[in-house]
Length: 175
Image 1 (cartoon, rainbow, N blue to C red):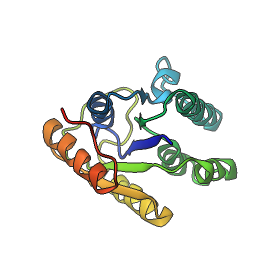
Image 2 (cartoon, one colour):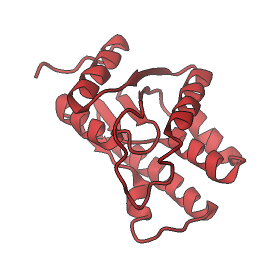
Image 3 (cartoon, rainbow, N blue to C red):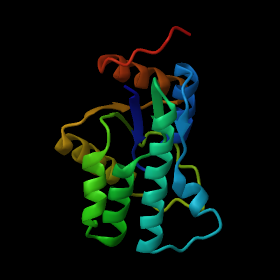
């Protein structure tokens, strides 16, 4: 059974950097954030675009799961899309909630907003990261899923993530 590690949290909190570092440490593949490629040439989007992003993210994850027997690292997953949808449009479609409920089990790493903001044309919430962090934390607790909070600079963040994963029975190979 594949052990899935999903990294979630507010924007500009080091999710991609952490995903790459964990994938390297576990010699495992990682699934990129589909929204980056989808929104690369546009700044405006609507609910239809967000639906396409959600379906694209699930497709990337499902294709990776078919190929990966060990550990799989996700730069994001449907929880991020659900919170994004709720923040941007209010009511979240039932199919998004159903997709989340049907996902294989995973261990979540929630990234603290303790890194400096890095400007990016796709980022929208520079001054709202603490509030969004609390929303992620509440959503993970409400679902009763396995998760831990990671923070600190790059090296400390990786060590924090590895400690969370070890507590949840996902032990990295020795470096």
